Image 1 (tube, rainbow, N blue to C red):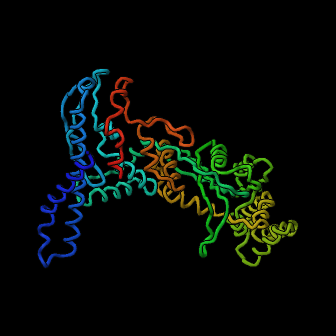
Image 2: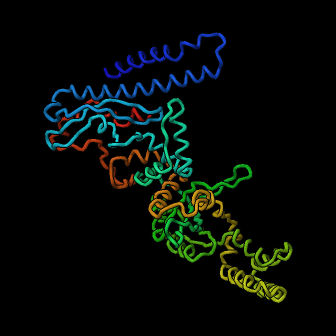
Image 3: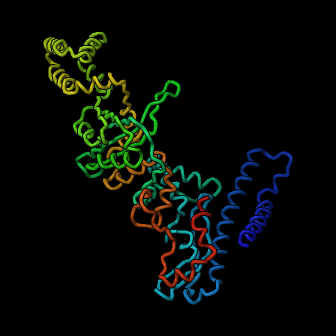
Length: 453
């Protein structure tokens, strides 16, 4: 019945808008751009009017529903402004007083999950979070503002608003649907230093990328089932293990390759990645090996000779060349000594990278995932805000639906782990008597569906 009424209302609204917007398009010399703008304006106007009318009808039906007066008394009528993806709407709804608690209750707000006093609906806030995961706050605000203001001017989403939404929003932990099966696992790791506001010490961000193979796409080498993990401080090994256990059949894993730049925390990471009788092999990133070679000599031929000495265990010859270069360039003694020790301390890891024909692209991963958005804005983050942005960024890079995770966690104060038992996400929070009385309300299944689709 309600669907039929809504259909009739939409048909009537379309006819009304056609008269308002399209009556001037019958002229034979009408321009194409005028045609597009008129159709665009009429479409968004229909959406705004339809949503506002629907919300008011929902409010009226609840007000006239049988038994309502036993549970809620009318306090007043008031208007609410709300920004949607189609532009701002204004609608009237009733404020009630609960006969059980004496508290205010607004049926439309509670039923559709609209947060009290918010000027933006959950759909728009979800869009803001999606944009903030990919861009800075200012650019994210401009992007969503341009979407809303296509045919309805007046909305301005500021950088501070985006920042507030990021800080206050809670996103569920995404669910792992199916366990992957592989006999070989690859783990790359690196770190990034980020400057924060009012803090002399930079944040030490650890970043790990887990994947289970390589594949070619034209000239590019792609990583299969790639997943990024970050931490600030401790707890990285636990997060990596939790992801692997949740995502892979660890009984099938027989070999794990850990790749990095030789940092102590990366070497220690391999000690935690041993499953049953699996073998864990550490390898040094070729980028850092070749960088060390360039610091030793800029001569291409001599660099190839030094490289062959390292890979073929000709350590005496390698030391002879370095000693000769120190004698020849005494002002470079410190650099040459540091790079010699670096290569000798990671000798086995260097050979593992070549012997097992591994490829480590961690430098590009940390650049694209973190550096391009965080180090380009020095001292632009507080510690609390950076933690929120970091999690949002990794959810985006791991290709999760950020809006879905936000809407799923909209009405709880704790972060829901979707890999555990699902919580009851009911939008109502009545007493037992109230819940029994209104469980059959015909709007109970609508929730956020109308505003988010």
